Length: 148
Image (cartoon, rainbow, N blue to C red; front, side):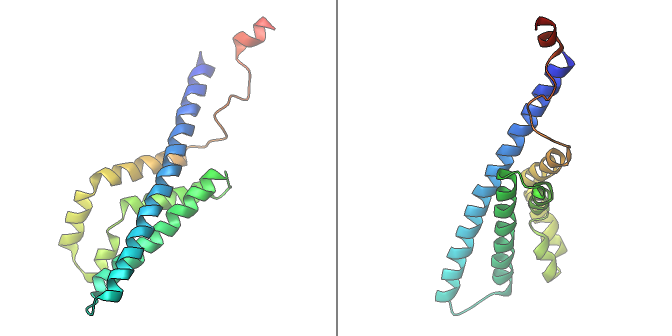
């Protein structure tokens, strides 16, 4: 019974990791799309706000980290855990670049409005911090050994 529960837990962990993997890819797609559209908008506008440039730059960096995390998880690379944790930290601290302008009140408000993604990031850090070597059981079940 213990092996079955362990197998189920490892399968659930594998499913969660794959969901995060593809979420990183989708997030990077929308991030790159935002960066592309913002740069096109800047090229047509005579006024450029420093905050907008910081937003574009941070979104480009976030998207690169997310796509690298997706690739590492998909290919089961040894550094996948570190990239996945970095991608989840981005979800938690998305509005950290706001602090560059000294707007603490705005930072706290933006972070509190982003609470769903903060929870997703915390959950992701927990998921990728758990040691994981595959969801299939390495040892056969004891009941299966008795039958053979």
